[in-house]
Amino acid sequence: MATHVSAQKRARQSEERRQRNAALKSLLKTSAKKVLLAVEEKNVEEAREALARAIPIIQKIASKKVIHKKTAARKISRLAKKVNTLTSPA
Image (cartoon, rainbow, N blue to C red; front, side, top):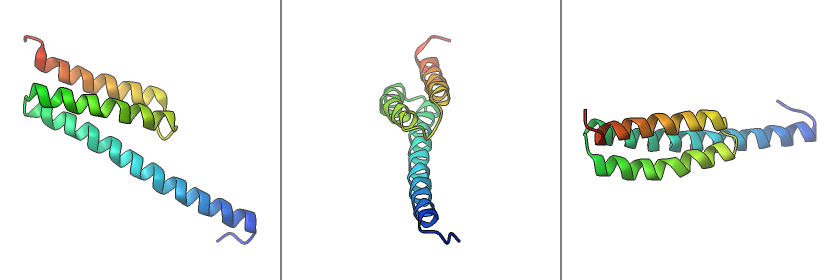
């Protein structure tokens, strides 16, 4: 445990950030899972709507530096690719 006042404050700040980051990562996983679930069910309209909701969430989390911006771009790209496979003729 920290003994200096400044170290105690830093520990409090770190814990707050850890909890905030965990909540944001959970939101990211949930939104991605909704897109994937709609894709599995082959529900094109629902998949598009879920993707449209997930993209700004992922971008916002990346802008807050909870995840790297290229990780966010990769996640968005992979989700969009899966949604687009539903619409294109196979």
